[in-house]
Amino acid sequence: MKEIISTPNAPSAIGPYNQGTSFGDLVFLSGQIPLDPETMELVGGDDVQAQTKQVMENLKSVLEEANSSFDNVLKTTCYLSDMDNFVAFNEIYAQYFKAETAPARATVAVRTLPKNVLVEVDVIAHKN
Image 1 (cartoon, rainbow, N blue to C red):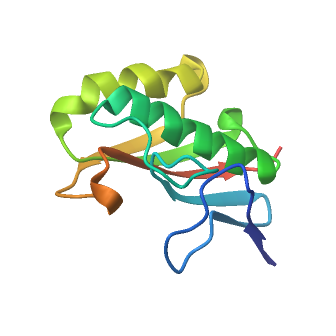
Image 2: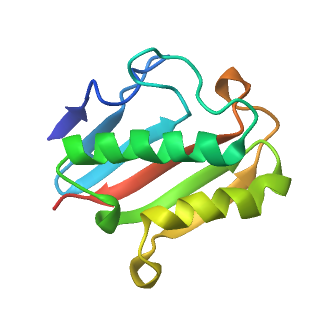
Image 3: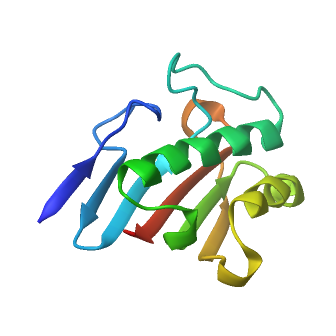
């Protein structure tokens, strides 16, 4: 049965979706952008690394609510507004995964993202 995942420790949805859903042992997290969960304000200005850190912290909170963690992430999709930010993004992203167990990943450049942020990441994981 499908279960809705929701935590006050990550930004609330800004559209008709949930922070995440699970089905059996699989967890599907909606894309997170760099919003502060308390204020719903953007974090990081024009700094892709500051934005990436907030995105990853938001994902961490939703994963924890789903009884999961970055160790259980199977696949990520990373959206960058500018592929020139790829190396800077990777420096922060890599801090959240062990190299030997890093998930599969796709990274794509997009024309724009919600609220004109620089980065968004979504996740597929399994429960602990």
